[in-house]
Length: 371
Image 1 (cartoon, rainbow, N blue to C red):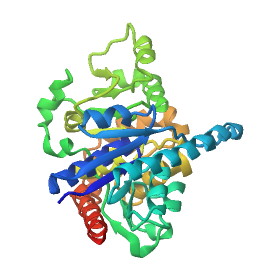
Image 2: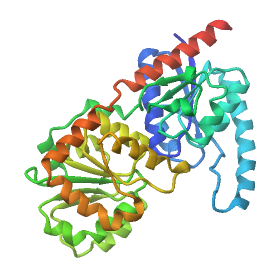
Image 3: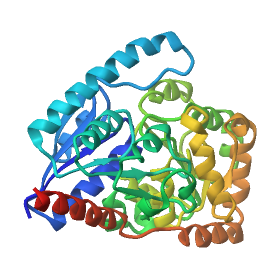
């Protein structure tokens, strides 16, 4: 089955990992499929996608600046240039379907594809739909969502509840707990907290850790702490001279399967991709939503779990005072940990990438065979 698929989006790992999962699932079902990624210039997809073995073309697109409206003159010009380039890419590649996973580049790519009569599929990862996807939904043929109740944003007849695709290696390479803890130089007999603020890091989580350092050192709890690349040098400088026997500090965790296996409790932002991983793996988690995202969608993601007693929640503004005390109380309460694990597991969607890939292939083949 020789089909051609464009997958567009990116900007963060939360968009890139699902995109690659969908691409891999399409290739597994259709080994002859040609897949082209379209991303945003100078964003992380321009490195991550080629590293995964796929070709990518960058657009000069960028996000709107909500604080400085004058800067959006340049943003609008880049958007126009991106739409022109997306049109050229589509004409040259002649895809049978275009898939949007969110992020700057998905807007111009899917808009152009839809205007040229190519079927489009949107993957909406959050519980609160973004502006771009709400606009693209008008011409989309299929909208794959991760949360119930999304008909308040999208036409009901286009929606398919699939869950979010996650990094496949997390499910394929599940490490044993004790071995995983030792791989971080820690003690398997002690409770372990994993602190992770995404690939770039989260200032609030890092500052909360530093402020609660004395309480952490007095406890019998150990920590795996991913600071993020932006903050690593600053954090290690502040930790200089401190006793670190029960803390593993790093800028980026490459073996997240081991980190999750080691963790009795996770502290994290509330990105949709991360939440999907916690659900599939059954992790007890405290969510600290980022306030710096469009439509405050991370808070909405977190509250969707909190309402089902599947996660705990701390506001970003309250994290310095409340986060570590709550974490230390929670990790010492085995009944609460068990309840959180049990409840979050019920929210997991399995084989999301494969289900989405089936929809992508069906749209592509119908379009190809109509020509």
